[in-house]
Image 1 (cartoon, rainbow, N blue to C red):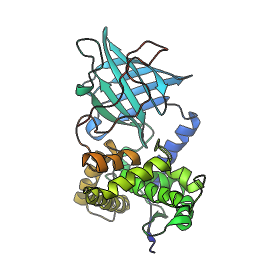
Image 2 (image 1 turned 135 degrees about the vertical axis):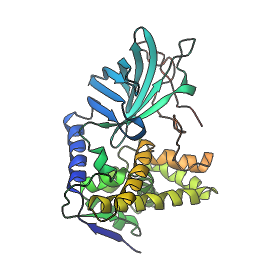
Image 3 (image 1 turned 135 degrees about the horizontal axis):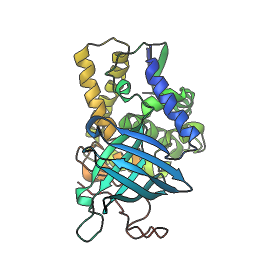
Image 4 (image 1 turned 45 degrees about the vertical axis):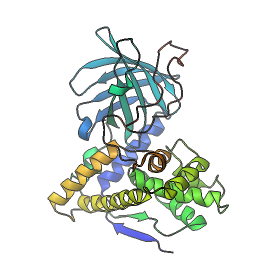
Length: 325
């Protein structure tokens, strides 16, 4: 058994940004209310959202500066509904991500139905989040701290170490979806083996934002491991672990500008394509992917409950699953 501990002067601004993100979420009572700004390939996109008793309203501005009125309802961990501009209607879906939301703009077909084949996604962060710093591209004053990557511990020991991480450390790790999937899968494996109670605090923390329980994640992980594509997952995992540590070093001023710019660009693409553990493992097992799609619409479904015509409250014909690649 080996526990890898990487000690560093964690960037104060990174932790402050993550703290603001957590605080904003807590103050909003878990609602989507707030302003969200696109980053990386989604620069220029803005969504201003207000949620009240399950209804979501506001404005959506696309990358070309076109402003749409937004009107819909919450569905599970996301929302969906209509976009309207000058009498022209489109549709939307969005759901939570560690930095904010992933927004799907869905044009209307000639028949007035959602045209999922031409849907466009955008990665949006809450405007309180310092995305530039999180990407590792912005030098900031550093402070003492530590980040722990749990490479070898298992069972109760792994759970104890994960639970003992500072909340902001867990948030930082959670941004790297394959790293989080790996940790979540290992904790869920311990649950399935009977080493832990599923009510263990560490398991609950690992499952945050995953929208799936340990049974589903463990089953999908087993299928992924048995597939011929699992080496791709492990390669992606190793890259993300290196990016995580490189980003911290960049923020401390310990790497040159070229290295940090390269890491920042890779982080930007990765954060835009952030996936839940179940989606990552399912893609490895069933579609030969690595959970790292790069097209305009991701390979996995948004998993918003309610398909076309299911929005009885408003009569809006909302879309179901996202398109496949």
